[in-house]
Image 1 (spheres, helix red, strand yellow):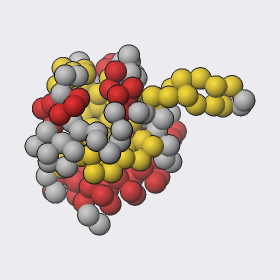
Image 2 (cartoon, one colour):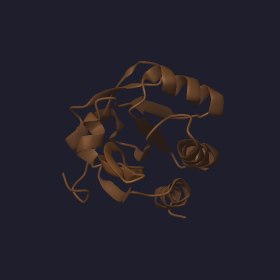
Image 3 (cartoon, rainbow, N blue to C red):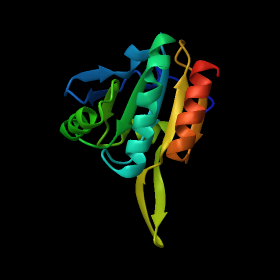
Image 4 (spheres, rainbow, N blue to C red):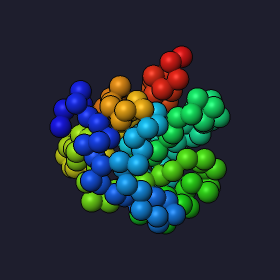
Length: 156
């Protein structure tokens, strides 16, 4: 699926567990403006920077009637522990089999110290109320994800 045609309706057949272990059908997000960000691992420096940046912007995001969703391959229990530790006010989804990430294009080849491996490509997608992707940023720094994601979401 290309990023231009990416929509929540096309992902409606997917259901992931949230940080409390509850199933969340992705189709249920249609009707909201959604900022969905993808991060490699809870409670690591870059991921914490990204998540806390969205936490700090959350009052403005919530006031605009928008939703923030974080997605990683971590198990719900690890997400719950990190959510509590960082006081994150939004839902975190567990995608250990990277079913969502594969379809969105945020799971792919990475390299570190000359070795290649498969992993999460730090990214975010902003969906409009119809569930259509308005902005897709792949391979983005935590700081730029916050700035650009919030700007698109709120029209700043």
